[in-house]
Length: 391
Image 1: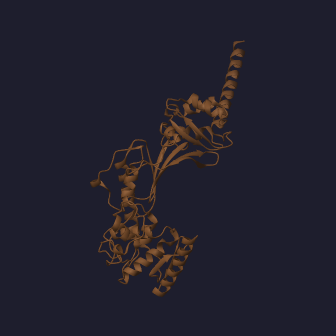
Image 2 (image 1 turned 60 degrees about the vertical axis):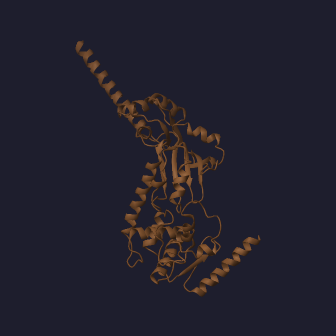
Image 3 (image 1 turned 90 degrees about the vertical axis):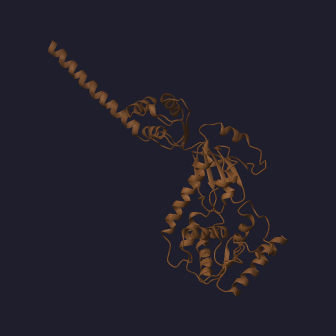
């Protein structure tokens, strides 16, 4: 009889073990299988939360099929104590394992609210954007121009005040091509999520702030951000200079930076940059003056503010070192912060016979090899200007 009882007990144990193994296998497959989420969501994990709360939130949003398996999986992978606060994008069909990875790997939040501070050539603009996870794009919810240099600026929207109080808000500073160092530094004074200030004698050198998008954190130091911009620009200069073609009419990376800044200020059309570069470099090779208005303007403003009017004859005839209608060769330094494409155009221009260009009314330019062709293009541009003025 005891032998029969032992045999039955052993059979039951084996059945139980097999059943347990089946449950474990099923749970593992559930943990790694595609999830039930039919469109992406933005999962917010508050500071001080835990896996139980997160699993219940995910189940409530139909992102996981079983909260218990989710928590067991987190325990089994030793990630229960690695939960990070933030706002995280959970894609359609994400498995429990993938969601665990998303909310424990750290780094910046991947969705939710983003403040973008856009520094342009003439002004800076603060934008508040919210990611629509289902569509995968941002929706602007507020926009205003911060005050600077004694200007009170626009009224601060309540939306901005609210997102500033949210620890999950992300911040980004976007610097446009063609800005001056003064414009960037002055505009950063309006970024209330940054700390610190820059003294006049600590300003970066003109041209050395790389136009780009920089993710920052609330409370980051302005000097540290400017140092990042300088490091990016220096790396670009070094990389691009190493790719230069032969027979350029300049010999140093510093001169390349100056040429790139002129190209940047002369055209906003990406497809034209190498053509514009060819015009200036053809002129230098022939000993012709560059004769470019942006350098003269920089000599008048010193890169501070916007001229806001046409150039005067006295300024076009001045002996300023930036007056390329008078001086030979290039000005003594950059006139703006050029982007990567302008740097590349400076060292690898198109091969053209062009020596002149003028606006063509479409946002681009008409190029010419001879002065006669150029004068005809100028006449067409004057007609376009006159027609626009009469409308």
